[in-house]
Length: 332
Image (cartoon, rainbow, N blue to C red; front, side):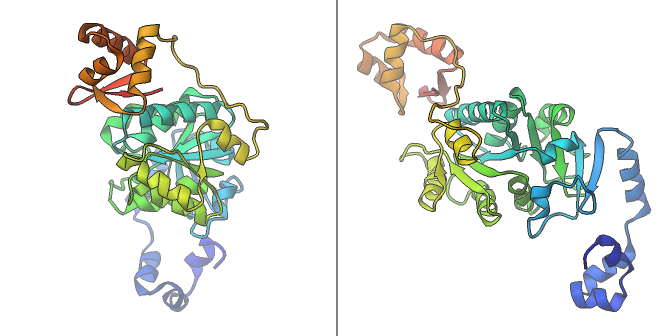
């Protein structure tokens, strides 16, 4: 019908024909006064805004999505919605390596000029937000609740930092709880705000693949990070690559595809101090495997005491992660 105003003044018979009796009745019923008062009170914060399709500063990329939301609640800097952005999504239960990679990629891409968009979920989403905030172009979180709630609760500090330095975005009214069906729905906004979507670790049937599908249907570039053929969390990424997603080994792969850099030199990600020779032997022996210390001793010829000390140093420097069951995984 062109605009919300025309819908609100349309005859009931026309609304019934176009939207059905239930939607027509909801439109005629209007918004409860208490809900309007709550929004008005929320908007007293100068960093809170409601952006509608009728606003000139509604994000242009999202405006052209077929099912663009009629309005967005925003806590933070609304100007970020118009900046070049990349969606970064992945598993809620990633490996330590996946979390490190997501944060490092997001940091490098943020420094290169891309605002990092994700969904505030556990795992890869949170790592991507932290990497984006560490970089120059910060981060946007698109959530599946009202902006007066934080889900999951453990991300309260992260949500606060995003609202202060980046932005939180939702299409759902204040007070909306974390309903399961809201999260797949918000994925189209995550991809719709971005130039492309990077998937880092995703099992088959992962919700991240829904975001990648939305991105492809919206004409966005889709990128996937490859992993071990033995890892269930690499299966979704490998499937995406088979379907035509771009394989991303470093940040430059993404920036070149988006036309943001030239040349083949990867965007560097700073590492900690260089490991000692003995620690280097352990990293080489570990490779891409997940191994117990006994196997590492067999491969390197080191005693358990020396290997344990080297592994502790490597863990503190961010080169390896200690997993349950006394297993170790290389992160770099």
